[in-house]
Amino acid sequence: MLIAREVGFHRGPRQVLGGVGVTLTPGRLTVLLGPNGAGKSTLLKLLAGELTPDAGGIELDGRRLGRWTPGDLARRRAVLPQESRLAFAFPVREVVMMGRMPHARGSESPRDEEICTLALARTGAGDLADRLYPALSGGEQQRVQLARILAQVWEAQEGADRILLLDEPTANLDLAHQHSTLSLAREWARASAAVLAVLHDLNLALTYADDAWILAHGQLVASGPIQEVLTPELIERVFHLRAEFIPVRGRERPVIVTRPL
Amino acid sequence: MVASYQRKRAWGLPLLAALVLGLALLSASFGTNESLRAPQVLRVLGQELGLIRGPVNPDHETIVLLLRLPRVALGLLAGAALAMAGAALQGLFRNPLADPALIGVSSGAAVGAVAMIVLGGAAVSEAPAGWAAFALPVAALAGGLIITVIIYQLAKVEGRTHLTLMLLTGLALNALAGAGIGLMIFRSTDEQLRELIFWSLGSLRLRALWPEIGVAALLALPGMLILPWLARPLNALLLGEAEAFHLGVPVQQVKRLLIFLSALMVGATVAVCGTIGFVGLMAPHLARLLFGPDHRVLLPASALIGAALLLAADIAARLGGTGGEELPIGVVTALAGAPIFLALLLRARRTGGF
View 1 (cartoon, rainbow over the protein chains, first blue to last red):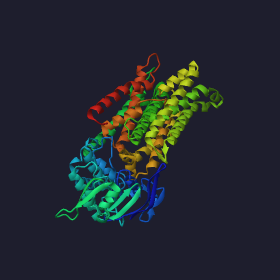
View 2: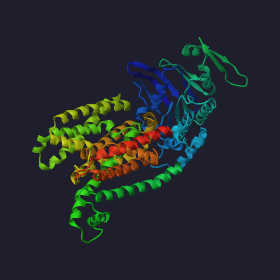
View 3: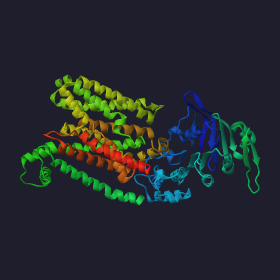
View 4: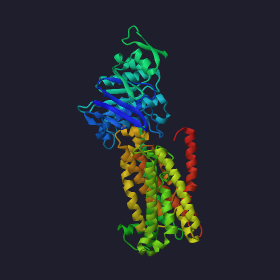
């Protein structure tokens, strides 16, 4: 269980996050919402162990993140970056194979090869396996990166929940792949992983997420089941938009239509 | 693609190793004054290793063991060390144009060496005879390490090495080092100037003596042995520092180790051969073109290509010289390196990627 307690973070004199307390629950897809500059990426980096909070603390299974070795963390927690530029001409398969690095001693096993193939197929990037990564489009690269982090935590470690942290996983994707990516994220949550995704699209969030954390000006404004948390009042307060929730026949959850105040 | 990678690996490295051996034999044969034929060289070597018996021309023995072999060894060592350091730094900086000169080792070592040549004469003349020979290499190595440490410290932000800041700091300190060298050239005597020029253009001749080579090897070998173990972390670093950390790489330690080992490798070669440009930049590029960017193959391939390039350049330096003098090897590597590098850049521009 990944728990942040009263976490604060400064960049220079500016407070980016203050007093944020959240728990990332296994088995649930949590989305992190908020306007630009609210501190979403910073919170994700703190949860990843990439940054150290200057107030409060973050614990994984009761142990401070700073006390985990990078290797132990990497075997159960994978992070999808916003974008990954790779200037050198690696074939896609080798990029995905890097995800197996925390598990491999020496060279890769046939099992690692197999996992890479499965992960590529899972993100609909199977036919890209032999292409060179730098030659791919932004959306294709994003799917390859997703395959890489799935490969990293493909198998659950004994008695330890897997954690996926996705920083704007839908940013470069076409509509169909936005949906398939989020339904994949939800599927992994159902397989008892704890999944966090930073999103901007409120409708995608409402369609797929179980829980939502809402950040504004570095503060946690609300957190909980998304259908309770995401209300017209909150959207107006946080995003400065007028929102209407419109029920759609045959769909459990409504569609949100927004317009400027 | 994976399969073809492995095929390339399979034939490529032994072939390169064979090329290096061939060049080494060729280099041991050629000389400005007396050239031997390969069988004569092999004969001396065989005799020395106890593989064959029989009479050996004592002149040949002297030439091979005391003049040619040290030079071959130095070429192998310097070429491999420069190329591996270059490959590691290009990976660390995620920049195919990174070069050992960028982290300040080369210019720092140059300042140290120039200062020793111009200002250190008195100090050296009072030292015991055996030590005088080491004064220049030690000064060069110290200069290289000092500048690297300064750049590294200045480029640290909140305990992390900021690579862009490091490149820019390196640029500024390189300029400062250039000014210092210029000042000392201005103050030097004619005789010192001559030594300076030879040293700053690089040469395998000046200090191709077994004790000096031994010291250089002692300093460069840790890097050459440890870097291959860092191949996978280096691959991960190509994705970005954050991504490497996510993949379980202890990024700060690895970065520190890479910079320190590279500085030691480059410092050791500069100390013995002077500044030899382009090998550290070009060898990894050639290796990448032949074997792809995976550091597990790239590092050994770079080492072999670097060694081959420097051996070839050294042979060319001896052949291209006139009247018993040799061309400085730095001139040869730049003369051959710059056009090859331009061709690589043009090719990269055409195919849209490095």
